[in-house]
Length: 243
Ligand code: 6PG
Image (cartoon, rainbow, N blue to C red; front, side, top):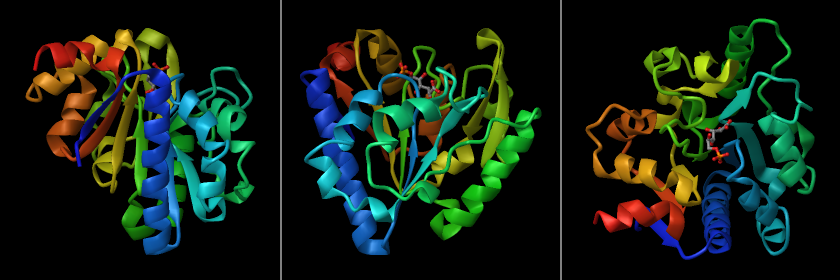
């Protein structure tokens, strides 16, 4: 299949992404009886989550067999407006018939973020099938080329011996908890979702010069090429102009 799909509008992008999500979910459920997926945070995925929580998608996936995790979290209370968990709960999780004990948020209560990261890593080892492999990891694209909370010039980019790590992001003056490269690299499917002209240049730079090391996403692509990109026309503009 084509690894990079470009859709005319943002709403076409979300529909295409929902179709892909459904396809991967139903394949995993038919093959293994369950679907284990890590959600991304930020703003972009909200449109996808809302689609999945409504007809037809809500009736086309067996949510009793879906297990939902998070790729990263801001180190804030779960009801904070910055919380990725809160965003996913409001746009998606509260509307779907998934057993609450199959939703695994990243804990943010411990005063020491690394304690939370370690406990989440333990949880992933216990719940994810075949040695901590996600069926699907949904990732966003930051304008600085970060994804999850793998930010440029941060310590987490060097982490190879943990599945989850805490990282202090200087420029945001905040702690984050994030899945690490090893966990992403071993996933069955990785799916980047990006929309809007603001992501166009960074996406073109990432897709055009894989050997660069400026963007954390490039480091991922050097280890794992078979990722899927879902972009709208605006996000793909600079890349298409350079083809
Ligand atoms: C987060 C995300 C982060 C996000 C990108 C893009 O916690 O913010 O996990 O990696 O995907 O920053 O964010 P937008 O979709 O808001 O542009």
